Length: 158
Image 1 (cartoon, rainbow, N blue to C red):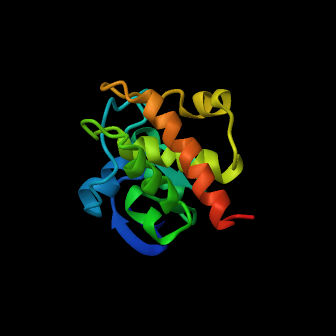
Image 2: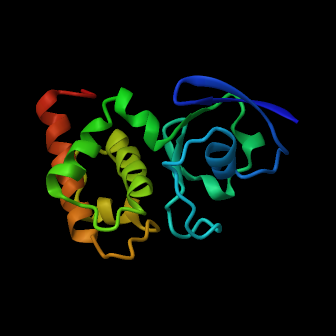
């Protein structure tokens, strides 16, 4: 089945079954390895991407449900204002092993797009379900606050 996707502002036509998880289309068909496989049942958040700006788990999203919608992966963030989150991640030195970080960053950017100055409780709620085996949660929260400050200082999104 030919399915046309908009991924990172580029059109891609793929020949896959409609029930194929978006994660596998991104990784195996399109070669975008930034989005990670973690659990396969939407519990860990490693596979988080944006669908029309909202954080979704790509491991449980059938590719047929994303036609004519905009998919943004970790590879696509650098071209948008959300790169401030990646900058904050580096400045705060968030990653330890780094495996979960693409999903963490995608969830954080979705949060900051709707809540530009989140409280700790709002961060915890938005990031709930993004698991980090290394336990970098305090640095993740710090980086989100830092990214909010960077975005505010640059006047982005206002």
